[in-house]
Image (cartoon, rainbow, N blue to C red; front, side, top):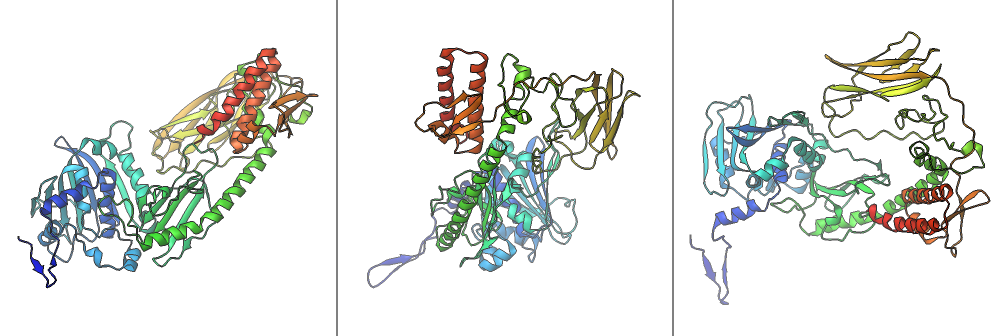
Length: 617
């Protein structure tokens, strides 16, 4: 069709833009989405926009081809039309959506995302063939068929009926591309949607499940998508910050220092992620503290964005984006202040608990390397015996003797020891009971002594089950007894020297499994002489001194003015590792005195201190 041109009196020519090849433009739009996970999230988003309460994602292999199904019970595809009209409208209105006519307030209230009418084209990044099956109020179902990189579509009555009643929409993508099949595993689908659609999942009463009919062995077959739970401690910040384009919702957490993976602050629009990391925001450079520190995680939700079509990543650089950047900037001062206070608190805790931390670090040295000697300490109440855990009773709060399994960390805390919080709950709950184990699996208990045990039930994937399991404890000797309190039990030895067995039976519904541990009742060992242990460091500020640590008058001194100490003090964990290296150096020199060793060990500590910072990044 020829383009109409108009010539004005001034000689200027005007007209309307038209694509030379409309399907070439469609091809560009479809290829702009190159992430199959995001393309799947778009299909799920359509179901959410339709008000679905149940969404099923099914991985299957049909007639030898990998296939992906998305089924929902939403309001249906344009329910006011007949099925053939509705599907025809979808196929002939690429780049147009009725959601575009809603106001920003309506979209924010309904948490709608789609408005460009190109979300379905994302199937090109998933597979070759696309079907949209639609049924409204038990009407006769119809199907729309599309093929990757082909301009034609087909609409026809679906042979048979959907095995569902009422109103349902089913999207099927067949012959999945190999990269998409790999990236769209059941676990990866669930994890990605849990983060990508977190805001939607929290705001809606919706159940999303992933059924994997391809998985084999112990791989999960059924997963429920649940919103991501952020680790760390929540920051005391305003929940919302008002802007001319709607509120900025704030949910931020401080990660524990030393976390393996650095934290990132995500940015979402109407419940869907548009930036995986705030530092990727293009309008303002947020690659600064606190956003780039790695100590923060969480979400910043702003529904006023104009999201980039196609990839759905990034936003348009308009006044709404500028208002978002200004609101985020307001958060920087209180967050930096909170992080500074947190650093001070951690440093104070480290100083107060420094000796115990060092004792814990060197606890296994006497048992695994008895050739090293510890130092004579002044305060007997704060020593760790040179025999390590040699003289402790195997059980209760004391340390286990050599060759004996130690209590699980945090299981039986020492008096006054700070009990660490349990790890955050997993994203998905563990499956049904498969196995159980006793910790420790073997132990030596003195006559008339006691020992704590714990049962750890696990699912087929090895994840520990924390609820819903009943335990029954027993032992094989009449001279001893074991008293169980759920997953924990206390074994009490008798007067006989013997080797016996402790059993536990774990039951969950109709599932039952058992485990056993070996216990040897031994004669009680005498307490070793309090001759040597871990010394308390004395910090000496001597910036001009080249020494890092030394022993003077029986006291272990650390140079707090040395450059390496100042570098290590940037982090409480780094400082502890620095002191551990210094004490290791002193133990080696004390055990194997040689004039040449001191210089070599000092250089080793220097190298470790410099490289330590890189290892934490």
